[in-house]
Length: 372
Image (cartoon, rainbow, N blue to C red; front, side, top):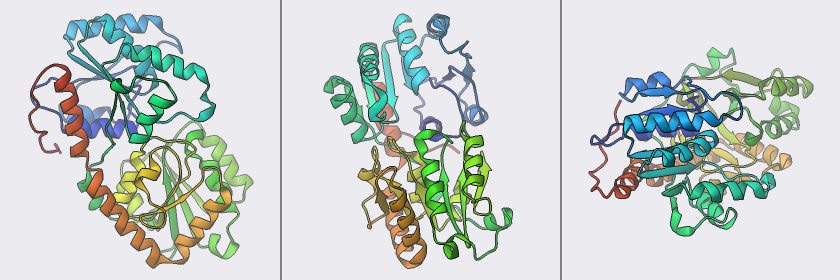
């Protein structure tokens, strides 16, 4: 179960996990809010998608509708992702008598989220066989900040399809956006939301020396509720000739492969899929020290790290990567080596499959090869 199916990190992870699903199970994806652009891709790999459509911000009947659907389909395992699915889905699964109920937490909530979040998390944990943190840092936060029982928490790091990103080419990207072939290019991938820190990046760009900014473009890849506001900020900061909004794209590996540097100015995170994808494409990455990112990026070894909200450090990092292409290339090579060693999605899928089988008292066959 998941809220909806845009082309974002949690949803892309779910798609890759289901490409590596076990043949002994029947699988279905249930969307609680709406469908999305990824729905046909799930259906193409043989996984049906059912969209319930939450009726308003609070829809108590949704729990009853979900429970009835789960009983009718005789579900053995329910695994929820993201807030709405976590909230409604776990309660409905227990009402329906589902034997095994799991939830994956994809982000560490910001410190200002308040005590209510921890209370809700502990209550919902009672309906859950196990809660999966997408990195060790997320799992520790669930235990230390939210007060969950350590025995109920598992850590399964996110992973990506290395083949998809290792073979990407950025050929033609500058031409598509009518940029000179010599133009330096950086970019950020993610939902246009407060979490992702786009405004910090815009302010860093505005503070760059004019000679550098005059030969630089920044691709903002993705869509979201802050798009209109960010477009206004671009105009206010005089960045209209520098910033390109690409909208939602299906060729993100191609766009990322064209970049001289990948920037992730997030204010909070779990273990972002977009970061792993950029590293797999051998891009030099400049990221904030939040969530599970410092467990992946070692400063000046396979990327650069700055503090969240530090616009001056963000600007300095951009200058460093663009001033020394050889250094940036070395970081990119080491970034890919890190992802190959630790974040292949086949390992992630094997851990999820084993978790589901163990909860049902079943032996788990080896995870099959990824489906096209």
